[in-house]
Image (cartoon, rainbow, N blue to C red; front, top):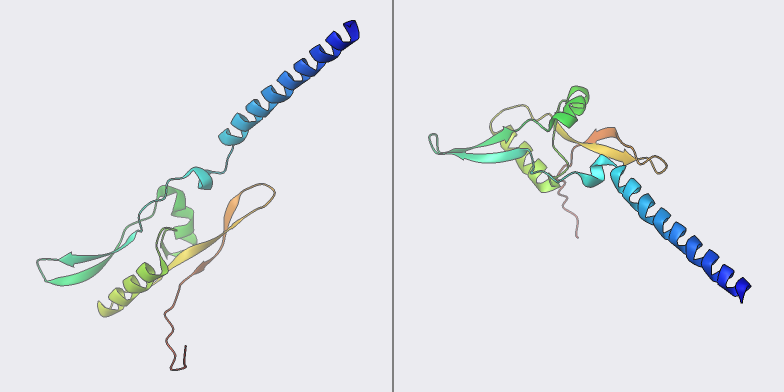
Length: 135
């Protein structure tokens, strides 16, 4: 009877320790999660605005978040990750109509599988391609 009671006690203590470790590990992992996973998505920083004074549309570039300043230094004007390809191409088309510079791209990011670190590997610009071929 004593052996059974000791065995049960050892199993209960081991279970409590394992459960406690899992809970602590969960909170520790959440605290050290990559910033990209926790960041709130922001609005696209490329906008087309209607100027009521002149009665025309204007393409507006809003500087990205301070965290993206190094990308601006590396690539020039950048669109943040929330901009869709359609927004990017519409903005470029509007800039061309205004005879303004169209140097803008969206950073291409890579996540390291081991460390979870996110870093840029380039900058891409989507282009609308229309062909005469059948679809």
